[in-house]
Length: 174
Image 1 (tube, rainbow, N blue to C red):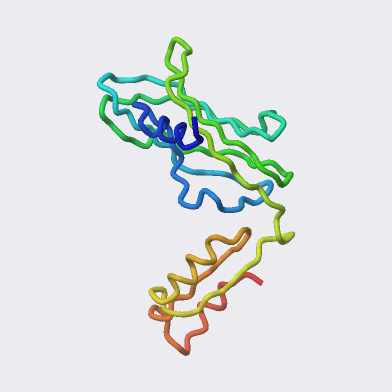
Image 2: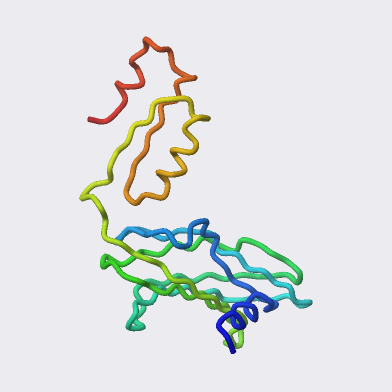
């Protein structure tokens, strides 16, 4: 069968595990954390009690990081079942994130996989950026900066400060 067949087959499975990652193709900093919500969809007519395992594999198949949790999935439900928090490897490369849901008897009820791209950190320390302006107009800038690895952004909202008051700059670290 064609590759799309397997994606379609997984999409129609009665149990589905997924990670709420708004930018699944984004680069991840080496040595950082991968922290996202885990969701379980149960479209079957029976309740499920599962043990959830998440493992991060390198291209040789070795496990670099792992997470474990438990979930009860009532029939015909969709719910957040936990917060995945994995340490990313210090070496850049491609890593496979595998999620598996097992029933109490050990059989695999559901599984899903996604690739993560881990890149070298661009700076020795996080780059600090100060944005001064009205927050409502800075939203597109903040959204673009959110995709960049190792940035610390501080926003000074001009609608909430007096133009001649220097208090906001006195609390900035050196």
